Length: 273
Image (cartoon, rainbow, N blue to C red; front, side, top):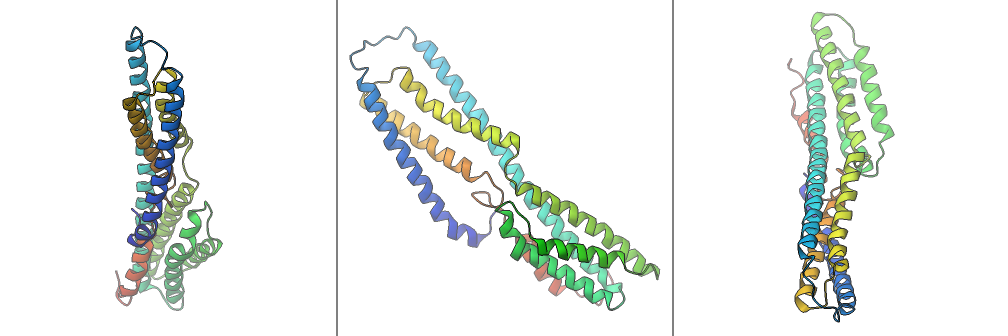
């Protein structure tokens, strides 16, 4: 979902971060397992509660998997929604541009300029700010000016009126789609935050539970705990990195607006749509 340039520049840094988090988790888990396990070396093995411990462990694992699955679906749908909204918004800009061919001068040039400015402003100015949860004031101003320019078009002749009505509808679509983009910049919904928290707590519980239930410092126990901790740490790091649609692993770029800006330069505006 992210553009190739962003992926090339940020991918190695994210991988290093995950490796660092995984390494720390493995080392800490090994140390804690050895320290806690040695304190139980004198205890006699007792398997009378093995079934109960196994059942509780399976329940924790199941709850973790369920929370992880729900969270993955939520963040994937959020990113897909941003991508779809952006494509629909860019398509509305292009459709409006097509309608300008029948407009009188000087309104035609003003509307075309505003449409070009809007697409470029979203890609160059507003998109980076969405990653910080804010919008661009200049983009707001361009959209407002575009709306005012369109509604002030003459109602005659019929061809111009038809184009004006279609562009008013397209501007309404642009506003609706943009509102969805801006809302997504606030990050996870309450449900998404709950699922992320449940995922992180579940991962921690899957490490703490065996230690509380009597893992010893035997080599096979230490290796098992280290591998589990490493995998869970990597999963949690990726989950946190997917929490925002405009940055991280599922980052959506302004590709739709870059493409539509190029498309506007190719549209033969002298011809009626």
